[in-house]
Image 1 (cartoon, one colour):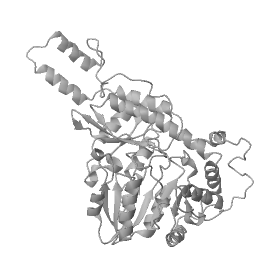
Image 2 (cartoon, rainbow, N blue to C red; image 1 turned 30 degrees about the vertical axis):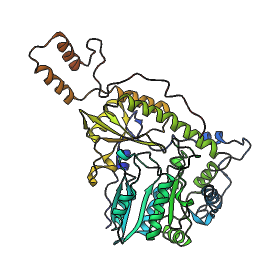
Image 3 (cartoon, helix red, strand yellow; image 1 turned 90 degrees about the vertical axis):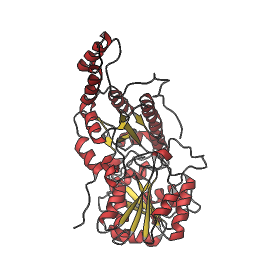
Image 4 (cartoon, helix red, strand yellow; image 1 turned 60 degrees about the vertical axis):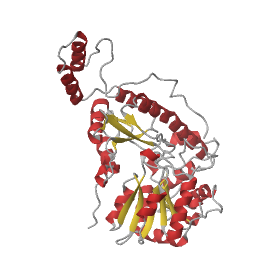
Amino acid sequence: MVKLEEFGVEQWMDKYETTPDVLNIAETCAASVSIDELVALCEDKKAPGPLDTSITLTYGAIRGSSKLRQRLADLYSVRAASPMSLESILITPGAISANFLVLYKLIGPGDHVICMYPTYQQLYSVPESLGAEVSLWKLRQEKNYVPDMAELEQLVKPNTKLIIINNPNNPTGAVIRKSALQAIISFARERDITILSDEVYRPLFHGISPVDDEYPPSLISMGYDKAIVTGSMSKAYALAGIRTGWIACRNPEIIEALASARDYTTISVSQLDDQVATYALSANVIHALLSRNINLAKTNVALVEKFVNDHSSVCSWVKPLAGTTAFIQFKKNGEPVDDVAFCLDVLEKTKAMILPGSKGFGHERGFDYKGYVRIGYVCHTAVLKEALERMSNLPESGSEIELTLLTLLQNTVLGPEDISELFAMVTRQPAGGRPSATLFPAEQESAGDADAPETGL
């Protein structure tokens, strides 16, 4: 029997996202759109809608419709030296199926895999379940989550078969810049190693401009024939409900091997989902859809930045450049909080749902992400604002109160101010005109309107 460890991220989401009145800022999709909203974004108001209701609901095209595959091929060709054929695209039920298919077909016992970390747990747990040895290539906050090529050199082995990257990265929101991608490709080419790039958050770049020399192209457009890319309509395109993802690879042997293995798990993707994805990626819709999501990301990341800055004594981060997620470390009395207990406390007291870093990115693998939480900030702005405001006013824990009481009682004489403070800590009432104790004491006043939207890509 194949042994798969518990999928920590998905288990947490499944357990808590249905909490009554929850403010879900753990979700990592851009705020999802309806079919009506998608149609409203279309620039050609006379264009047909996304669904042809006269179509007979057969299995449809086994590898995905030629229209959808061609549109994806065209998108990947924009920054490529040569155009991509639709034959290089294979449609799957979401990127999670795409990743699983690649790993299931290419990896087995005796293989060695290097996986960038932290990242989506599937990318390292599935290879392990298939009998491969997995080495984690750690991204470090103190280095702004820039991949260290010297560390990659140390990790590689004679039997290394696959290097896995995630760009933009979940959970940090960091990007692997163009020069770093070139270095990874050169490294892999010299050793004939395949690269899998999970690009589900592409092209949601909101902190780096497309005209920047280091703007990261898709790995598939960089001329390496052993590069495999996976993508999805869920994250950057705000259409998780249609369950449409894909694999892109210019190597016909690899794509045919994956198509053959796919027969055991997926006959075809729903024709209805295929139609909606094709419509969303059309020239009349894609620009407005991405602009909507990028502007939402810009507006909302400013709110998170203000929150972190206001509470810099207890939390730190590297500001995300892309995607929908931020990885923030919280401390109390100078020490990282217990992230699981902290997230449960926040959920209970504020209804704000966040994800503990150790649930999927954590120290059980020898890397200490204690105190880290992941926030999905490209939800509706009102939800994010309310959640952050409630978190800012989160009452201190009982242990902190006990520590304060102990400090006061150790004084030789309790003065009026001490007694007032003691009363305030017990009753949660203001003392001497000061605010009630909170877990995140504000350190500075707000400067400007962080909610003001920005325009353009």
